[in-house]
Length: 352
Image (cartoon, rainbow, N blue to C red; front, side, top):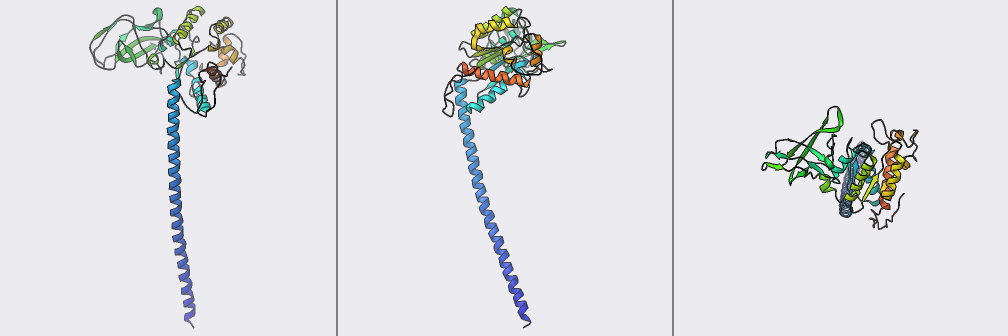
């Protein structure tokens, strides 16, 4: 009789052990099933993601083949700062609406003047005076660079100089360097050239054209020009002539000109003349920015430019957004995006 409790306890222990083993084995089976399910879901997710990336890449390639891209030329107002630049916002607007991306090149350079911007893109000749090119690709040679009609240029006056290098002189590719005046960062004091590959010693003829990267690579892009705010012209008539050369360079009519922020008392005359000459290709910044509340008293005077920019000379975010939206809508008005988008929706002309 004394063995009965022991037998009962032994049986109880046995059943508890069997239960524990069953639970452990069951849990392992469940864990294995969970792992297999997770692996399967992960694989499906990665496959879907890979397919989406491939499809997106194909959309981008097709769009780039059709539209090429957008080249935005100008000075600090174009360059902007990080996400506060109209080229950046246009890039985002295109992706949001059309679900593809095309190159949108921000070719703004701080302090670069009007004639230099045009020379950099190739709308006016950018030339070099005669010099003897060293056969070594380790030597930097001083050179003299000038633009149309012997005008002084201030290309390469900033830290970042998009759209210039590499350059080509008489089919010889190399890098063009510049150094601004120590007391005037708005002027380039010296230019230097360094060839990429070793070769023969040759004399580069007087007036040889410098072919920039922008002229080679962005010739077919839709071009947006914003000059006049950093000088580089002697009078309004001189500036009008520079605009005319830009229009002639854009033979396919794929361009927009952004108007100056201010030219003092002449701004009304300037805006009327530009609207007459270029119609929808011209954006009147005076009219555009006067519609924005920027907590500043603005008028058609020099005060206007200061009201639109911060203490570094960069457009205020609200002005940048307004400009980007206006440019984007104007590109539609001009028919740049007049096609079927990726969702099969017709993109009819629209805009301000």
